[in-house]
Image (cartoon, rainbow, N blue to C red; front, side):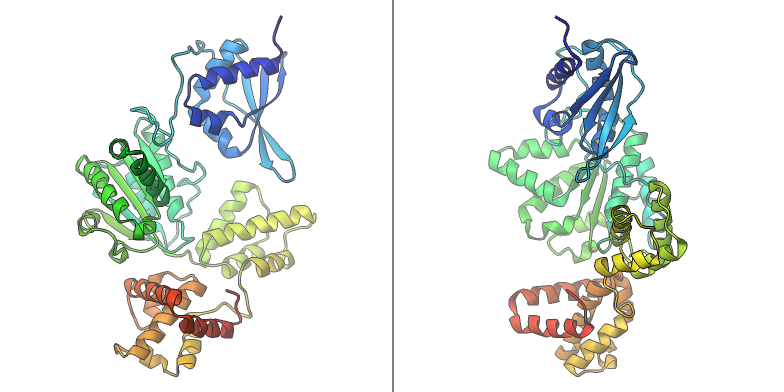
Length: 467
């Protein structure tokens, strides 16, 4: 008895399961839902839960899919996808897969595997990269020109430039994760056989802890020592992970000596990561340490224009300018406002105009009569503690002046979204490390001193801002 198309697709899944790891199957293939099969056009339509899954399947598993379809359905089968764009509103988009490949069927022993981090084959791993974060979508401006240029050079010549290791730092929302992802994506495009891996510091720590629990530390270290381009994000997360840092040093040292590329990102410069060992800091100095600053208004405008082109959005120029000026300083805020505008316009069937923008931004971004400035903060803090701005700007180490200086820097970083270097310049000509140290000191005191917490709350209330 001839099988129906759904049964044939189940056969495909069974064959795929024999050729990938269990985790790969659960992640990439189990969520696929059979939609229909058109025998006349020999086209199979399946549903996938997101655009990312579609792109990942097309990038890493197209050969495997072609082989199993050939074996179960016959030759020249076209695989198309129905991508879930909005789960809540049941919105989908139909996209074509790669052109059907006439290829020998897959056997029980062969397959196109793309293992997860700790289940890797010697030559192929899942790089864990976000395929949407590329150099093409990373808009260049004054605040990111140097890191972007260096990152592009590294991607094209990994491990062969003087920029190894490459340490990029900057405040939240300035594009660090986008940049280091873009390096990995470009490198993988140019050198498909290189073992590129992006991992967050937190995930690395979780893997390390699990390896200790399972008594497989050697396997863990051996795996990471096989990477050609290692990208670690948010290394400030290791502040209380002494054993994780010690283990990372052995991995780092091995890769560094072999000329493998190492890329690290943090919200502060290496000198302010007190938990790092001196031998790591010394090696960082051999490469390049680059700061990413918050984007200025013009760069925000350019980013918004690029997003409109990419997503096919139509936003009036005055609205774009308003968003850039109001949400200035964070790419995440910009994208959040645009996404909210789009949602409002669709749900309420209205055009995106200044009135809608003001309504959305009022809920998404703090806007009073005017943006809060460092001068506003200094004025309020000095008034609260009864000192003058001249006292704060002086080089005096008097306790009261130091306190006002630290509180002002902390609140400036919290509410203005300026880079630490700029805040330091505006508060007595200090450098960025002084600002970061001040913020850390205030944060630590807030955890233990309830009276100090009440003082800051009083100052913040005077801004008429929500925490």
